[in-house]
Image 1 (spheres, rainbow, N blue to C red):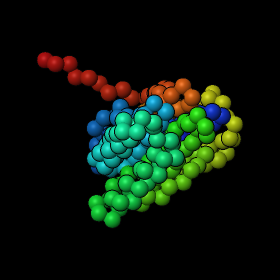
Image 2: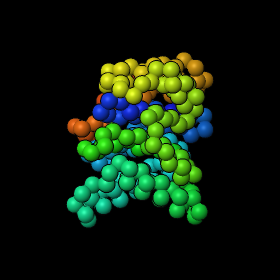
Image 3: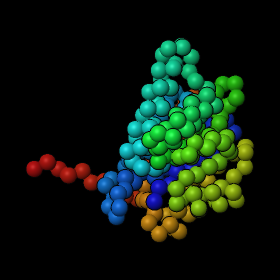
Length: 204
């Protein structure tokens, strides 16, 4: 029951994801961060099979860092999205990854951007996007309330509306969400929306 969604506002992009690690009918943990910081100004939010999600996003992160190390300049958001799409397309014909991605970034020349990349290597630049069962509710909520010149406060309010909608309408809704933002000041964690906290077992 994964939920990953994001949108682009005035000078920033924001992405949110549930934090549940689930297998079959079991919830293994409720604080799994599914949004990785690719570099100083990029975020990659992923949903899909846990092994594929972790392995593929780490692979992309290390290759983006390797490019910057070799060339002395970072990839643009568009270049990182196209590289990610290319790796998914190559794997599709060999050993495909079951992973869907929202890649958000900020470039000095072009500003914020959000890219939608699905498991069959479809790439689109979007203003708003979502994956998972939560997309049925978050996309309709964003269609109703989204506009291109949103402030950070308006965007976070819209993200909260999406989370409320998912929690109230999805039959097995994830309890916790993490929200991250990227703008001219960099990529960073913005907030958590928690209703369940993982208990830490004390050692005997």
